[in-house]
Amino acid sequence: MPTWKRKDAAGTVHFQFLCSACNAQKAPFLEQDQWIQVRDGEPASCNDCVLGCALTTRTLWGAADEVRAAVCDECPTLDACTLKGRYFC
Image (tube, rainbow, N blue to C red):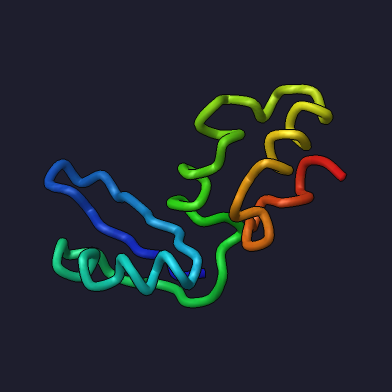
């Protein structure tokens, strides 16, 4: 998984886990901001993609299977979703 790491001024280590598409967009900016890429390959889930997920933004991961399935059925990026099918059939 494209994994990026950066330590802030307080010594706290931060990570970014990105899919290839998000990594291609963000890599130049991460490098400019002193992030170091520590691993290649695909992640289990991309930080940026998860933030765009309606289940996450609407806090519906604990909802009934039917509710989650309906939300995912409306998603325009379902085919590319790394979370698809992981929590419901």
